[in-house]
Image (cartoon, rainbow, N blue to C red; front, side, top):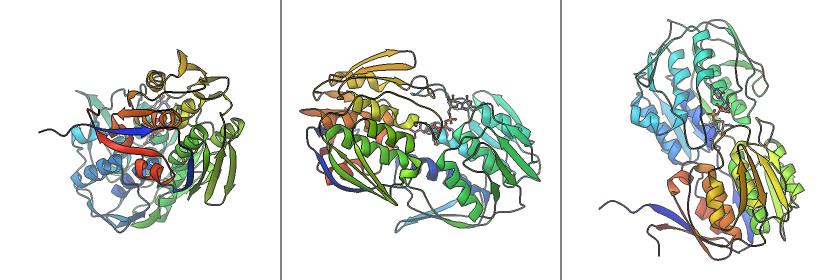
Length: 424
Ligand code: EPU
């Protein structure tokens, strides 16, 4: 008999108190894992989060010929990749599989990869990745829904100006350029901290990179890269999600291993909402009491307000005093959580890429369905602040990106458990 789908059941209205340790970053771990394709040496990582997206990345690497070993908190990948053909079903199940492209081409493999389509948060083109790789000498052909990419014997350095500062596009091109002949300059790069973390790992493998985390990155190609040890950076989006939960539910929580320096725009908004933030090296404490103050914001590339925290701060605004205008500038369809938040009594009006939220004095628990990863997180936050029970279906979305979320929230006093649907 097929397993019944998993859901979360949350009884809201409890204040959150205690400490949570932040996990390693999903969006840093994924490119770092694919970077191991650049070498047949042993790569070892600590603080890799146990998430379904990470499991998918590991399955893809194994299919390509890498050996994987994960024990006692250390994940290792060894051996050379045998092939460049990705299993289409595995690749389609995770957009970030596009990150295999740059490294495989850099080691001279022909790559066949299904073209990623649109997704739940909007159209997500890969033109930036492909145009940059063509500049490095790769021949690209798209047919039958697949990208077929053939590299020359060795990639050639180039001057590349990205049409848009794509995060994974920047990562793919930096990885590809590490083994190219000559100096590559990439302009209009994304500046997200995960790119800096990936570059630290590549440097530990022997790559020569300057400017990671700025709009212009220069890579001096080397002939070979070796193994490395790398500690994955803490997940800034996970940290922001728990801070938003405190803002909505009230209480006082300290996040351990959290880095306030990469959360500036988000923390500034929480403070405007009346949350007291105390940041120290390796820790962020948030204290909140009473209803937050409604505060609008616009998403933007780093160091602006992250799109990956838009849904969570919208949830906080749903119970705030006043009205907030939220503008989504990165992904045009990233408002699907609004309809689900409305089931709890939230008042959200959508017009194009803008949402006008009027805070309600009270939300009431309801049966909801998550539509994507960060939308799930927004429902959890609203449910923690609501009275009564909320059931959130579509738990697989949440499990793509949050390690042990129910256990972590229980440890700070939330009433939350995993259930099977239908739940009565
Ligand atoms: N864009 C283009 N052309 C391209 C590529 C992107 O115009 O060829 C545009 C997109 O349409 C979008 C913007 O650039 O408007 C940003 O897209 P980007 O390519 O940077 O997104 P991504 O690299 O596919 C990563 C994260 C996302 C995060 C975005 C934006 C990973 C694995 N994924 O995606 O994370 O939302 O950057 O910060 O790093 C999540 O964790 O929930 C998530 C979706």
